[in-house]
Length: 132
Image 1 (cartoon, one colour):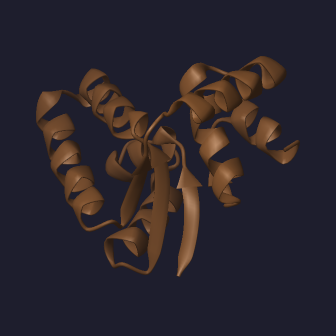
Image 2 (cartoon, rainbow, N blue to C red):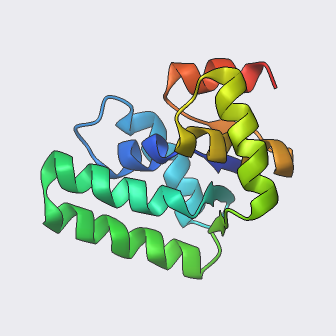
């Protein structure tokens, strides 16, 4: 089974048809829904996804996204990692070294810790990930 670490922008793109990355993200997301792949993410990611979708298209779509993501978390098709003390220090080092936002550094730290590829549509994140 394919396992990857996922940035919030991938889930946002998968859940919003108007997103420019929707086709690619939706295909990956379907693999997770079918149980053929697993996404690993920070516990911050579902919060970011709901907030971003709410701001972009409204609370009804954000609520639907929350239900879908929560269901996949319960099924462990999406596995969330808590931000413990060790991860916090490592993510802070990544943020400083690569000039990243905090949430992006946390997702990158998880990918590094789990030794899994990371999917993101943020070029700054992808550039930093290539250097790890």
